[in-house]
Image (cartoon, rainbow, N blue to C red; front, side, top):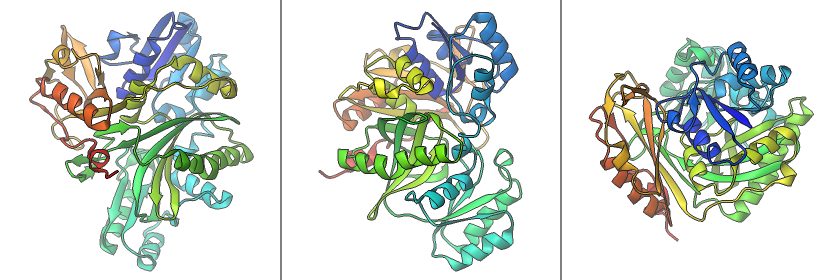
Length: 424
């Protein structure tokens, strides 16, 4: 089968890396891809958002299955367009992708279907925002309603901070996210990411991960798209997973079907484990980045049948197999990220860095030019290692990072700290 992956980030490199090992994949393409993806798939210079061009290419190249990686084309209806053209695709419809497209939609869904979540308000004016911030206990969490590349969330420790964050969003601070804001109560606890495949009715749990959103060591500085991750998350016991499936994931799938928005694809739940139990922070409708990198590093079976079963409605007939090892990913980013950064710097030492078979470097923002790898994005590399424990994987990943010669890059030096410091 010829398979096409849409996207150009570290998540898409991890998906291509996993799919390239499938005996059922005769030819693997990625649009538009990046410098690392080019080593495992044919990169095609087509935007992941250009549905007409993607469909034309699928017909010309006789693509049998499309995996849509990023959230933007999912929200824009890429899967709808492909399926209408008779091209099987993995991912939710635009109606189902509202779980990520609008945080307010998800909050309303949880409230109406009694899914454990958090107190909130949806505001479109500063008068509505100020009324909520003045009446509720601080701190408060202020979120852009729509897509903001993981950067549209801030904590208001004071009323002025919360109102300033709301005003920034309402005045168009995140143009792609719209001018609506969700203000939520702050939850105390441990955050965890949980993933499940869904085929509209059946739900197949995939596992857990924990990421590091803040740019700096010690979880300091502004939020980013993610500076590192590890899997599995030690907080996720079998009993907790069962509780999350019974109280959050399955009720959400049932609610979406009841709302006329049946969900197919991967459901990525951002959860807070509180003293009162797990509560939903947000949903994403695609694999996380860099969580996908550590999940794919641990996957010990063919990925393609799992993705096809989610599309075909046959998830009850498949089961994933996982390595016992833990996996950890350290993101190397361009200096200045998540603000302004330079493009075009050369990265050396990648071959030496992944000489160990338990190390894989997933590219996120790179291009290959004249046999050189150049940085083209904010988050550029995901140095991923597996080991018997998170600590072992961390040691191996950082040894690999130290072999990479890239003066224009930086990285956090404490990825995995929560798992390693965790007391038995």
